[in-house]
Length: 336
Image 1 (cartoon, rainbow, N blue to C red):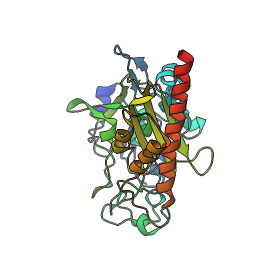
Image 2 (image 1 turned 90 degrees about the vertical axis):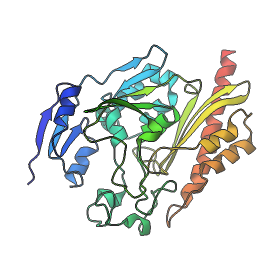
Image 3 (image 1 turned 180 degrees about the vertical axis):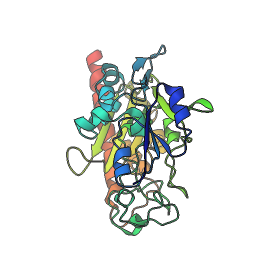
Image 4 (image 1 turned 45 degrees about the horizontal axis):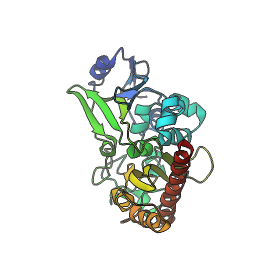
């Protein structure tokens, strides 16, 4: 049996120092890492416990934005009054994910770093998985690929990123704060996760030993009027086949600005700026929403069992936009 060492970090600097050890992994809630460890997919030699670090605060910033500590639980963020009032899409995404027990344990930082739920990756009985064993191949491409990617995939990997929260953050222009041996840096959420290309084993731009310390949400005109739509096989505790996060700034009947992000369709949260451009500055109509839906799935590549996702994603974008535009119009009317 492989030995594994455990040490609790006293503070952020201590955590980063401990993470320099070969085979070290940070552990917070452990909801993903421990599953992968039990399956033999992750093989940490040293666990650095960061769950007690003072990184769980949810704080309003002087400019009206929000800073969410990386150790804040999914439950705490999803039910926070400021989040629910100013960033509705984030609350909806978090409360649509997993069970209450898992949300109580899972952290913001861990959620961003969770790995794919592709069954060819999570089950070592399947020999070919470039994400697990680089260069071995991808069993999903010719296998049962109903849950797999239709956008941004590569011949090396067609897995999808499972997070609901990350899709909402992509629609909110969130920024991830990182700290490592070389100091602190900030990465826009849309640049945080990598596409598979020829290195599907590398999920994010996080450097070895770097720790996520916080996620920052700017106060934007479109953040309040937002919505998360999740389409799944069953009504609870299932990963998204397709999800859509939308946020709109409706001014005088026109969409002054907006954001659209898709989940369940790619290796990362999938922003669709071409679809946004079709609607920006326009009065929304059925024709324009349909065009935006088409633009959102432009370039999609389906495999043997997931072709339905293309039409599902197109329709989900239209439905999510209709919902948020209706709600934004009703709230403006009430305020008037």
